[in-house]
Amino acid sequence: MPAFDSPLFVGRPWLPDREPLLALIGDVLDSGQISNGGPRVAELERRVAALHEVRHCVATCNGTLALELMLRAAQLTGEVVIPSFTFIATAHAVSRAGLTPVFADVNPLTHNLDPEAVERAVTPRTSAILGVHLWGRPCDIVGLSAVAERHGLQLLFDAAHGFGCSYRGRMLGGHGRAEAFSFHATKFFHTIEGGAVMTDDDDLAESVRRQRNFGFAGSLDSVMVGGNAKLNEICAAVGLSQLDGLDELAAINRRRHALYRHELQGISGLHVVDYPNEERSNYHFVPLEVDAEATGVGRDDLLAHLLGENVIARPYFSPPCHRASVYRDLRTGGLEATEQLASRTLALPTGPAVSLQDVRTVCELIRSAVSRARSTRRVHHGSSRQIESTNGRIPTARARREPRRDVPLVEHFEDR
Image (tube, rainbow, N blue to C red; front, side, top):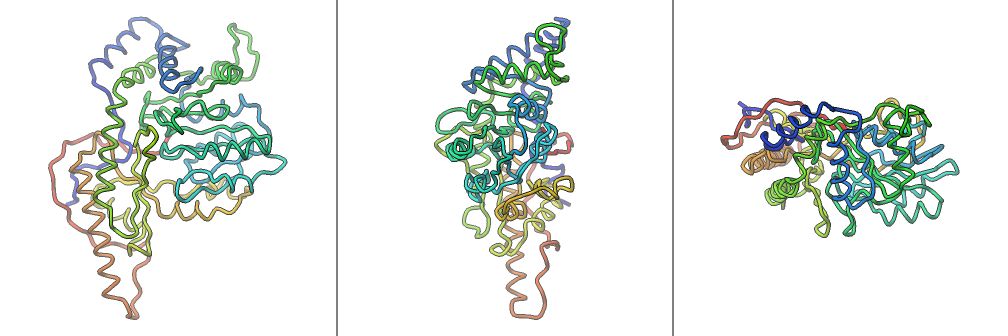
């Protein structure tokens, strides 16, 4: 029997109390308007813009389209420098906007774009830098801004993970020319499906508004090419029902992140990626780096072991974007840090559906796997017998069985 009776997922959607949510949805149904720029979407945009200290929040039906519309509104041409260590939607949005993604390396400590690598990737065809605030940890915005200014480039951000996070005391959303957010169900804040572009640029915001509604400009005359990327009223109601509880949710996430760090500290070769203490963070992810040489167990071995115990950890972001079939022929710079991180990073289950005892049990499984792998390596050290490769199997360790409340079986994918 596995350690957990039902799967323990990364990114299980958090839902607010049912009564206020259903009341908001009831109001939408009573109004008779469920889409096309209703009052709930407008209220959500106002409140989110105020939270992120920006003039404009333009809600969309998903985060990928938010990215694409932002890029189109910026009127870019040619190439856009982006990280490869990110979800594939970042690269797809660039391509769908008629641009060419150029992959630059990340800083191995922050997992975000390295300004020096970006500088090396710039060519006369480059029109913009698109940074990604991975895990909700902000990019080196100052460093990227300096590169953009030297080369006359626009600076934009994929802030899919960045809701409620800050950089140097200022909330994400108003940095660069614009930032795109995801409100997918697996994110810290969600509208089940949704996204938004946040910006202080009036012209860019107006372009995104028109694009999301067939290019209409207050009439049925299309003034630009557009489509249907509108958020509906019921999804907006789901988002509104969560806003007052986000501080509590961040605190829940922070306690679980802190417990993972406490339980796994001192194990050579394991590193729980931390969040900057001086900034606001949502602590929505618990990324774990696994150094196979130091631990005796590879990331993929550890993942297989956890999956066998019903711990549905995720190997983010593996493969990285530049290894996707559709992008293999594109120009890239040196991506050593990206390759390394993609082979060693694992996201662990967290959030309100994961109890503190669940975290302790997961950590016990990890400790046991590392201990057994090291014991095996010591036994076979010096012999002709080879240690199993990182695609091998780890002897199963039985963690303490602890009662936990059942949750629906919902598969998770990193989505926008």
